[in-house]
Image (cartoon, rainbow, N blue to C red; front, side, top):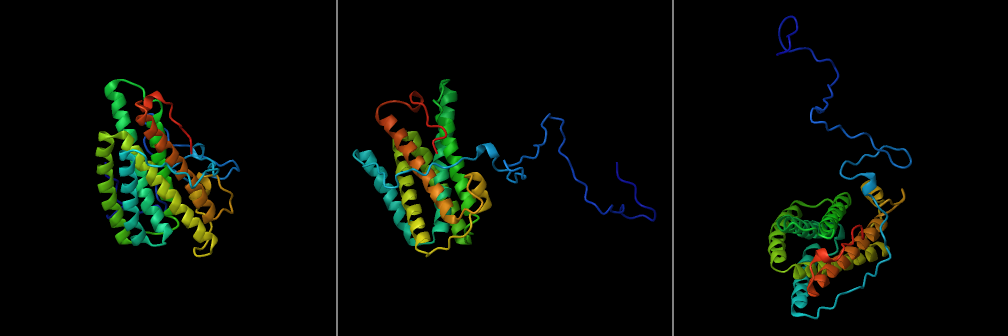
Length: 274
C-alpha cells in the first residue's frame, strides 16, 4: 500500500535517518557475521577472508629456467619472448602499470585451464586429481595481485583499453590452444611466469636504486600476505615475485606430466603450493 500523506498533502515527511534494509532470510542464507583479525580489529575485506590469507614462501630461485628442447617448447618460448618486446616499448620502466597489465593476462590461464578440466571431469565422470582447484587457486591469486597493484598505480584510459583488447585476444587464443595441446598451453604459461619473475626482479632493482619510491604497502596486501604493519612496496613486490615463481614451477610441471604421456589426474596437484 502507498504510505499515507502528511496533513496538507505532499510527500511523507522524512524521519532524518536513512532506513537500513536487510536482505530477506527466506532462503535460509544468513548475512555474514563480522569477522575479526587475530588482534581483535574488524576485518574489512569482503573479497577474501582471513582463512584465505597466507605467508608467501620467498625461498625461490628467480633464475630458474626451463630450457626448450622440443620443437613445441621452442615455439612456446619464442612466442612469449616476442610478446615481451612490445610490452617493453609500451611500458618502459613504469613497473606499476606494467604489473597491472601482466596480472590481467596472468589471471586468465588458470581460469581457462580449470574450466576446461572441470568440463572434462563432468563429461567423463572422472576425478581431476585436484588440478581444477589448483588452477583456479592460481587464477584467484593472480587476480589478487591485480587488486593490490591497483592501489599502487592508477591505469590511464588507453591502458585500460589495451587491457580489454589484450584480454579478449588472449582468452580466446589460450582457450583454443588448451583444447588443441594442454602441454603447449602450460609451457606457454610457464614461460610467461618466467618473464613475470624477471620483470618483478627489475622492479625490485629499481626500488633498491631509489628510482621508484618505496611507499608503504597497500592495506589489502598487508592482510592478504600477512605482512607486518610497516611493510613497504618492496615487501609486496617480493611476495608477488615468489607467487609468480611458484606458478612458473606448477605450469612447467603440468606440461612435463603431459610430455610423459600421462593426464594431470594421474598426478596429485600441488594445491596451496604458493
